Image 1 (cartoon, rainbow, N blue to C red):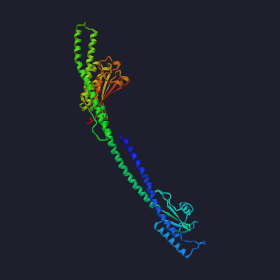
Image 2 (image 1 turned 90 degrees about the vertical axis):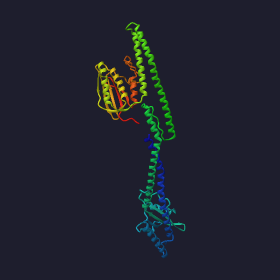
Image 3 (image 1 turned 120 degrees about the horizontal axis):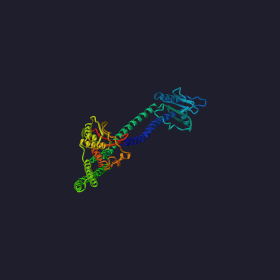
Image 4 (image 1 turned 30 degrees about the vertical axis):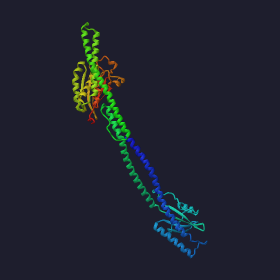
Length: 468
């Protein structure tokens, strides 16, 4: 969940920073250019004031006084170019130069300089040139009209290089970028802390839910920080878990008490039936049927009591050699299989895992018992032990009739037995007890078909140490 929430927060924060940073960068570039434009306008205004008093006779000749003024203007333009490297000039309306620097520079016939000159001839001073960005290598042109007696007689044009201006703009952008990066890092750190603070109770709740789902009903959500809503959720979850545990405990206690209390009346009833059988003719089928049903009921009560105890007892987990334990169970069941004409073989290499030896032995007994019980004569039951990553498995494979897909979905349910096996001795609780015993220690039991016929039962136990 954190991997989905954190990118969303980062994207939103990045969008906010970009929304603030981009206009700021544009504003900085505009401010730098506007500062340069204002300086150039002041310079062109000063040159226009000098050029305003330079007269030109119709034949193109000037007097001595006008020559002095023109020389002053030319000197100013030349000094301006030498100091600042800015080309500048004063041009008559016809485009003929009055004075300019450097000497080889002249008014072009087209381009930005010409456009600014033509605009100034209409008595409009340059005030908003096109923005020059740091990656654009072009000059900044500013033109001002020279007005005499209300008429534009000449135009002052400056053609400024923009290297320094673009450098200052780029430096400002780097400062903004560094600030944005620092703000982004702070935002990411804040997002990490925020998501950790919000999701910590969720992770604790998820872990506790998994513990309860795997049979550790005593697990509860530990007190943790987080939003008040999640804290209330944790308290509500603990209350729900307490209620569920109480209900399950009551159910287990009822099953155990009922099984225990019914055993004595049932034992007395079986004794009376046994005494009654002495007064009936030997071989009476009805009394034999009643005795068989009574014994079956007694077995069901014993299994119910075992199931209640299995669901209530906590597993005593320890490092166990699964191969050795499985080999012992194979050896123990070998006489029973041999008496039925079934071959029981085991492939049990040494493999360690965390398990309750008593619970695992009981589960293997139930599985091997079923495999031998339903395997026809002259067939084989195979028991193999293996390790797969964090899990050790004991696989019991038989060559019996097997189960259909619908039956596989129900196998292991309490009191469930296949309709084809109703005449086989059993209560339908053995595999349920095995599942409860394994689940208490973090193990599991699974069922699958074995081709071409038969059933494969996989008992799995963890190889890693249990959580504290």
